[in-house]
Length: 270
Length: 305
Ligand code: SF4
Ligand code: SF4
Ligand code: SF4
Ligand code: SF4
Image (cartoon, rainbow over all chains, first blue to last red; front, side):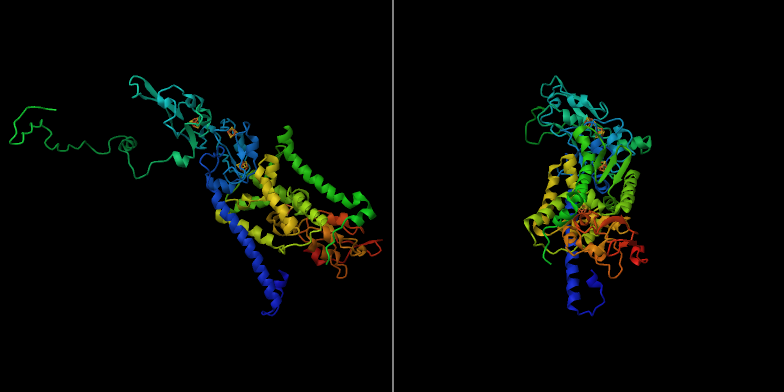
C-alpha cells in the first residue's frame, strides 16, 4: 500500500510492481466476494419441506435479517427448531424445522419469536393462530385413508385449529355406493402450517404435508371475476334486471323430425 | 532472515515457565471460558449464554451481537429489532475499551485452531509460505458488506468459518467443523498466519475498532531488547512490533498502535528481557536504557492521533 502511494516517477518499475500486486490481491478479494455472493444466490432456495419458525419474514427478507444466532432454537421448548448444517438444505445456520420430525406445538407465548433479537421473526406476531409457516395439503389422495372411505381422521383430530384449518367434508362413496367419504379439507386462511397433521399421519409416508404458502395457498388472479363473489360484495345483483334472451325456438316443444324421405317411419324413439 | 523456530526457550530459562507462558495459558482459559458459557446449557441444563457468538443472550439480561454481522444485515436494508442493536453497541463499547482485535486472541473459537497450526509449523520446521497481503482482509470485509447489499442476504454468514465452528461446537452441526479444518491445513501447509493474519474479514472488522481502542501492548523496556527476534517469531502480526520496538531512535511511541495487534501477549511471554507490557493507548512511557527511572516522552503526535 505504502509503496503504491509514494510519489514516484510513473514508469518506476518498483511502483509498477506494487500496483500490480495490489491489483492482484484486490482482485482475489473481489473474486472471493463474488463466490460468496454466488453461493448466496443458491442458498436463497428453501427446500419445500423445510419450514421457517412462526413469524418468519418472507424468505428473502428473512435471509437479510436472520443472523443465525440460534436463540429461537434455544427457546423452543419442544426442540422443534434446528439450525441448518451444510447437509440440511436451508441457508447455512438458519433455523428451520421438518414437520414430520418435530412439528411446531404452537405455544401460546411464542417464545421463539420473543427470543429473536433481529426481528427475522416478526415480533408483531402475538397470536400464534395467525402464524403462517406453511399450508397443509393432502398431497396423496391415492393413499389417504379417509379418501378410501375409512374413518382415520387423525390429521383432523390433532389439528390445533380443528374445524377451522381442517374440516371433514362428506361426499358420496361411489365405490360402495352406500357409504360416505369424509374428506379432510384444509383451509389456508386458518392453517398455520404447524405440521401436527403431517407429523401424525398414520401412513408410512404422510399423505398430508405442509408446503410453502407460495406453493399451495395462492390468491386468485385479480382479473378473474367470480360473479357470485362480486354480487356479494356489491350487496345485490350487478345488473338491473334479468335480461330476457330469445330462446331461439325452444319456447314450443319441438315438432318430431320428419323421417328422411324414402325411408319408412317406424315410430321408434330412443 | 532465517526463521526463528525456538521462541520461548530463552524466556523459560530466564523468567521461568509461568512468566514465559502466562498470557498463552490465560488466553486458552479465556477462549475455553467463553465457549463454556455456551456449553453449560446444552450439556448440563445450566443456561448462561444462549445463542452463538453471532448474537447471544447471557443470563437473560445481557444481549451481545457481532457488529460485523449486524453491519451486513444493515447493508441489506433490514432494520433489526432493538435487542440486536443494543447487543452490537455493547460489544462495540467493550472492544473500544479492550482493544479491538483482542476478540481474536481471547474470544474467537477459531483462534486456537490457527494458533495450533502456527505452533505445528514451528515444531515441524515448515518455513515455506505463500505470499499473501495482509490488506486482503480489508478488501474482503468491505466486499462482503457490498455483497450483502447486492444479494440482500447476510453474505459472510453463508461461509463464515468462525460462526460455523461455534455452531458446530454449541449446536452440534457437524459440517461446521470442515471450514475450520480447511483453514488449519491452509495455515499449516500453505501460508504462515494465512487466515488470521491476511484473510479473515472478521478480524479486519474488529481491527477497525482497534484503531482507537484503549487497551494496547507497549514496549516500554525496548532499550533492553537484544534482538533475539523471539517476539517476531511468535507474533501473528509481526509487522506491528517494529515501529514500537525500533522507535527508540526516532522517539516514536513504544505503544503498539497498529490495529492489527491482537493483544495476545505472546510477545510479552516470549521476551526474555521483559520488554513488553499491557498498558493503555496514551501511556507513552519508555524506560531508560538502564531501566531505572520512567521518563515520559515528549508529547508525541502519534499517540494523540
Ligand atoms: S411456537 Fe413453540 S413449538 Fe412452535 S417453534 Fe415456536 S417455540 Fe417451538
Ligand atoms: S433468533 Fe432470529 S436471528 Fe436468531 S436464528 Fe432465530 S430467526 Fe435467526
Ligand atoms: S398444519 Fe395441519 S395441524 Fe397445523 S394448522 Fe394446518 S391443518 Fe392444522
Ligand atoms: S483473525 Fe478472524 S479467525 Fe483469526 S482470531 Fe481474529 S476473528 Fe478469529
